Image (cartoon, rainbow, N blue to C red; front, side, top):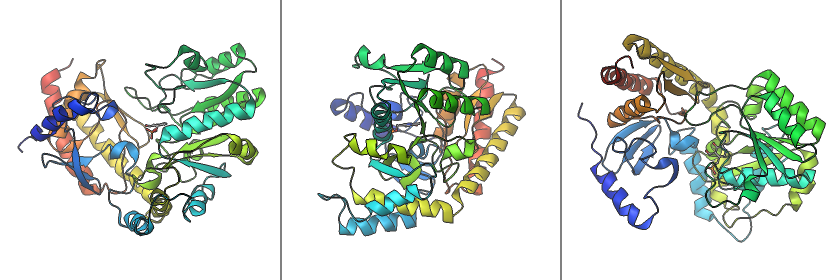
Length: 413
Ligand SMILES: Cc1ncc(COP(=O)(O)O)c(C=O)c1O
């Protein structure tokens, strides 16, 4: 098979650098992937496949960092969005999709008695911690080291341009370490507004870890004892593990939950939700955005959540993820290239043994990209309902070759 050529992608990247800082910023930059082994710009997509500006086709396991849950251009979601487009998207006032979209969440998520809409996950997490501060009258936010909650100044992972006074109000503990969380509660007694956690530890560059019962119960208890709120940031995992929220999958009860990514199959919408007792204060926290009220993403969200249920998407993603993992594990053994596959099957991730600098991962995933399989070397992957058995089989043919190449290049190192 001829390896992919990315000439047009990199020409465009150079053109982009003249008018956009860095050309492409953040984790979508080919430098963050493996410079030269990945495309830079996509043209179109269908189902679980995407095509780049050089005309190369990929089976995509990044699913646009999680938004593509049903398959790109899913007919029911597209029809719902198109019907709203035909009437108009962004008006002076919300559309008549507003209440229906709120119900799409409130009716499915037990702890959610109300929702507010934003565009990106960061809108939702920023709002949630602000509600917690307003409700408790306290200032400090507890979060886990390495847990990503977006680009709010209180949590942005690289705080360039953020005053220390702001970052000092966020305190961090190792995910899952109840004693460390308890010590922070002790040290900042009576000043902790909230603990914000992701449903599982899904940090970049690390194996995915599930929370323990002891940690979840312990954090809940600490919050209750000290009058702090527990926020579940379900932006990444939401609607891939359980329609009621990933806290149901892992068994804990937050006071607020944030969703985004998968909720509208790629249309820009995110929500923060909370329990009844927070509704009055939520109303007083100022929250607005020019596009927060647009109707198309709401129409898409309503259709998307219904389709996830109707099509049994969650069970299907888990099944496909299991097949993928089983294949990767077998190939790792076959070639004597040890790896750890972690995470729930619908949100999997693979790390190579003895790969501190991620050289093996970059090489492996880069070689896969050159052969039409889009994996990320140091960020978790995503399955969608559009990944079918034939796609997994095709993927495993490529990864077999990539394992072989990785063994040849790195040997037993
Ligand atoms: C757990 C979590 N929270 C918040 C965010 C921020 O979402 P967004 O990039 O849509 O602002 C992300 C994005 O990856 C995320 O994974």
